[in-house]
Amino acid sequence: MPPKPAPFPGFTPLSDRIYLRNGNATTKPPPASHPTTIIIFGWGDGMPKHVSKYAEGFHALYPSSRILVAISKTLHASNQPLHDRIAAMMPIIDTVFPTPTGDGGAAEPERVLLHAMSNTGGIFVAAAMVAYQERHGKDKTMPHELLVCDSTPGGLVFSAQVGRWSRAMAVGTAKMFPWPFIVTQALWWAFLWGSYLLEVMKGSEASGVWANRVMNEAEVTRRESSRLYLYSREDEIIGFEDLEENVAGVRMLGYRAIETELFEGSPHVGHMRMHPEQYWNRIAGCWKAAVGVE
Image 1 (tube, rainbow, N blue to C red):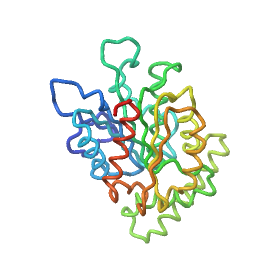
Image 2 (tube, helix red, strand yellow):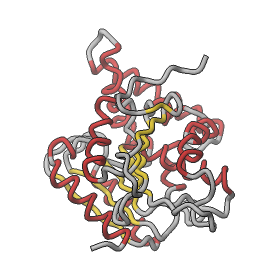
Image 3 (cartoon, rainbow, N blue to C red):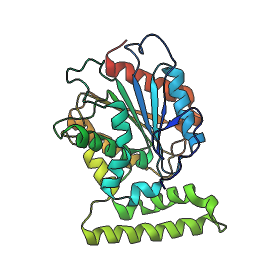
Image 4 (spheres, one colour):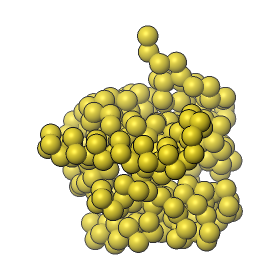
């Protein structure tokens, strides 16, 4: 039996991890200044009731846009085989891009805003980009005007990051265990080290390293798109120095625009909760710039 989708009020499940909410019913398509589709890739172990707050924020900005949400566990990001990660994102491709956009079809081309949250969200947005190519050909890249990276990416050196990653996994699972938080984190630390050493023995590429590489390959993601990185110095899981170093490298790759927004005092994927006006204004402004609307 396939896993039962988690309750997600207002959304229709397309799989046990992908959910769809159509925009407000109108006789007209979304204005040219709005995305036709927004795809949110949630953080690891993000619960629907929490991730849905971001969907509500986007709906307030763009009420006619349809919204898809991908919810994944941290274990999906760290241990799921690559082909399974890609296959899990295929419902997004078949819903949003049943045929390659811009290839002369009768339908209006999609205007897509991608929103990746934490490293798990980054891993699965990369998986969706590869899924698009598997469906439509290696010479195609998944259409999108703007990719918003919220609290991602972090550092890619395992030994330097395992403490942060084990904390992230402990935060998502602490309620499942009766012992102190530090014990849960220690168990995940040992689990991550064991998984890492196994991957090294097999010669496999770590999922975070794979995602960072794929998201920056010209053959996979289109350079005509823009990016916005949202972060804070107080993020306890994604080091701001690591993110800034990554952004510096991405700026050299020829994307249409690379923007950043620094938030004061907010924790990991907590920028919207602490600074909602700054958060949504920055996203809306970058979207307008990405589609050339004043």
